[in-house]
Length: 284
Ligand SMILES: Nc1ncnc2c1ncn2[C@@H]1O[C@H](COP(=O)(O)OP(=O)(O)O)[C@@H](O)[C@H]1O
Ligand SMILES: [Mg+2]
Image (cartoon, rainbow, N blue to C red; front, side, top):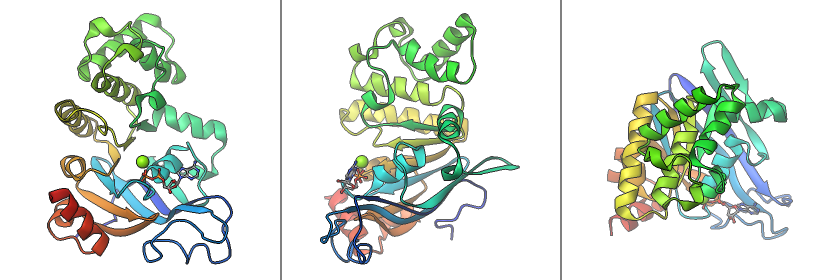
């Protein structure tokens, strides 16, 4: 049975931890699922994530599921480099002879990873896009960061990406702030895959969209995962998203992983009481 270990990992997260504030001596023991809180009652520090480990292979999407505040986005942001982790390591292996321990890289190297190795699709398009910039301009930015210089080549690639993500080409030169929510997410997806990164992190990519629009965006994401053979992490509080996109998942509660399982098995037969509660709530 394949659980958290993937044979050919591309992304490996080990004992990742993130604390906001200063922990007291027993801050770790006094937080987590059994304590029923992620807040250190002595200092007020928040243990947003602790001891989080998983691996993801190429062509595989790992789900991270849990209620709001359980630490899902924090895990994603520490991998992406949006936030500095407090503990643990993140390794990527995107070529057979190239293994990087990304917390050991310089700030410039970390930024470069975001150009061509690790892309992020945020719940809020304003985090992933420049809202006052055109769709074409938003997609041009990772391309120029990767060294593209020729204007018509950049435009050609941008239109190819917009077609792939089903954004009408006659909107290419409009500022994304004039776009609907679903179309903004499609532009974020186009930008994310612009340099064909091997790893893409999705944080609640359809939360906040109308159901029918969300369904279209999920279909698109599923197609991109397959077409690009991505190693993906899909963060969501919504089991229908996890079910549609992932084969394995971890369940987080108060900053800790309480269960890791094949997605089908988790939905059918959740083991941890917290997972049971989540699954039955989702079915209700
Ligand atoms: N910048 C921050 N400063 C302080 N606490 C934070 C910050 N970001 C997140 N947290 C806290 O960390 C915990 C986990 O948050 P988050 O990772 O956003 O959860 P999720 O994505 O599962 O909703 C929450 O208690 C949240 O309030
Ligand atoms: Mg979140």
